[in-house]
Each structure stands twice: as structure tokens, then as C-alpha cells.
Image 1 (tube, rainbow, N blue to C red):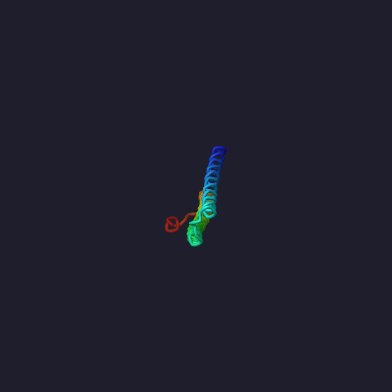
Image 2 (cartoon, rainbow, N blue to C red):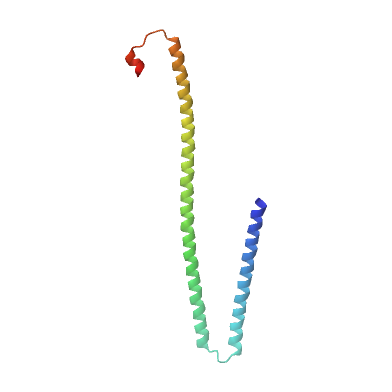
Length: 134
């Protein structure tokens, strides 16, 4: 069973690495295409290069903002999850302690009932009706 989980993670990791490699190759291809266009095409002016640079910069800033937003959401959910796990652990601990205390009290109760019965058998005195009812 553990091997199956480990194998799934390995496949996920390999798929992620493959996607990263494809993205890297595509980025490199775009970069070389732009570089080739700049050096070969005289109609590609400095203004065109500046516009392209601004577009890339804008896209990069948007990507970083989105990444930061998702990271903040992750951190918030992680903190909430940690808090809930702590509360659950405290509740389980309290429940376990209460169950042990209840068991101990039940044993004490049974022991005291036995002592009362043995004292009743040993006692020859008469108990007034009022006290016996209590």
C-alpha cells in the first residue's frame, strides 16, 4: 500500500518535471524567436522592442501578483487547518481523559456499593426509617 502511494507521487513529480521542461523549452523558443526577429528584421524598431519589453514586464508582474495571492490563500488555509487540528487534538485528549475518569469513578462507585453492602451485613443496629430512605 505504501508503495502505491510512493509510486503515485513519483508519477506526479515526473509529470510536473515534464510540464516544467516543456514550459522551459517553449519560453526558450519564444526568446530565440524574438532575438532572431530583432537581429534579422530591420522593421522591428526600438519602439517595438520597448513595447514588447513592457508587455513581458506587465505579464511577469501579473504572474507574480497571482502567485503571491495564491500563496497567501494557501498560508491562510494552512493556518486554519493547523488550528482545527490543534482543537481536534485537544478535544480528543479531553474526551479520553473524561472517559478514563468516568471509568475510575464507576469502579470507585462499585467498590463503595460493595463496602456499604458488607457494612449492612455486619451491622446489627437498627436504622431509623427516615435515614434508611435517604
